[in-house]
Length: 206
Image 1 (tube, rainbow, N blue to C red):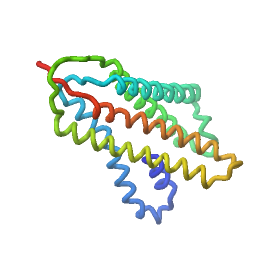
Image 2: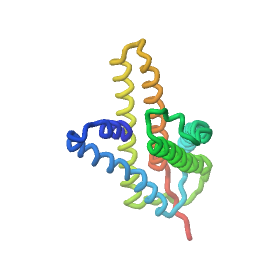
Image 3: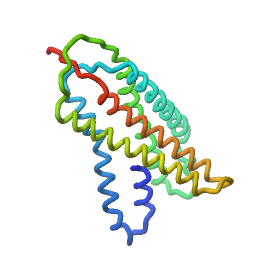
């Protein structure tokens, strides 16, 4: 959803930019959901008992993000002159696109490490379950809701592309491939708060 809204805004004429102010606000709100959730998770003291199914879900999401990271690195690092961006873009735009792709790969690598840590959390303690902090509880539920809506939005976009594009259109497969990758990315991000939502927080003495 964020990428789609960003494309709409940046592709519009300056005279019509004011119409997309609500979309820009949506972008800002969606953009802070994951950082707030991660901050709340960091501040929450305790140990998480993650169910086996959620641990395997975390591993699957980590593997998918790892493949995306390797794909990006494989594409970006052998291209120091940004030639893959095409001649239509100026040097500054090609450099910005290159740096943006590498930053995205770094972000996915961080999320991959977090998901893998969920998979490695095999603690089956007997400590009493305690309620999570109010901040973490609200941030987790909001993150699950937002990323769930993004998954639904991308699924709707896939159906829309399949129904409105001509079957022999050369751009159909490219659009479907890009949207499918977006769907997998959003599903991996959705898995992070969802795993915490389905896990038990155990009391730990310090």
